[in-house]
Length: 244
Image 1 (tube, rainbow, N blue to C red):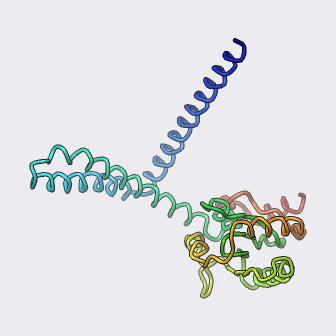
Image 2 (cartoon, rainbow, N blue to C red; image 1 turned 30 degrees about the vertical axis):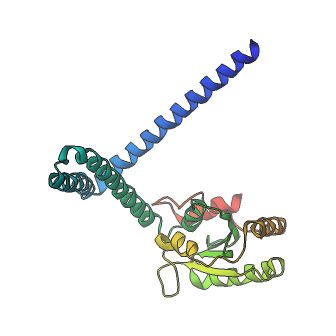
Image 3 (cartoon, rainbow, N blue to C red; image 1 turned 90 degrees about the vertical axis):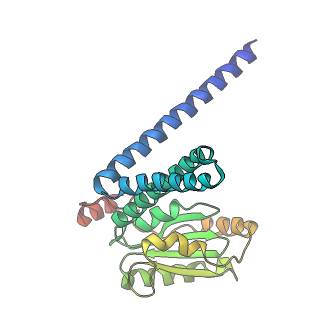
């Protein structure tokens, strides 16, 4: 009986936790929608236009077969999905615009990648908050640099030389985040990495991760957790970093 009671309590607790998570997700979505609507006057017209336009299209197609009411419901559902996709896309674009150029932005993007990527932030860096991040994936090893190109490129070259013996013939890719020629814009960083050719398998990824974890990171400043907040002073951040 005691075991049955504990099982019921565990199920009830799990159900309550799922409900709480669902409420939190809805609250976060609503907050994001409210903020985006205030800053983006086109958001509501585009979302409403998507719902009405797609529902109308389904309704018109339904008229041809006398199924207008049958097709209206799926038209509204598809329109709702498209409207949500528009919302998500515009929120993402706004987030990238805010983060672009701020220390920690590239690390934030990398750490939120979907799929089998092993990300290690700030494996090399300096007091100016230029940093090199390491990503292990099916393409091999990707070194991502953010900061001033004239400072971050030597950091990347040193890091590449440091790990070359450990990774053997595994390809090492260099990516510098920025808007200049030969650099990858922050908003395109995930897409750029995902499009790299597949050169190794998951077992090789595990082996590389173990080897490079043992190597550790060179001593350097810790990067901010996510992009540096707008309005924050670089000198203040650097003083905080040096105290760590």
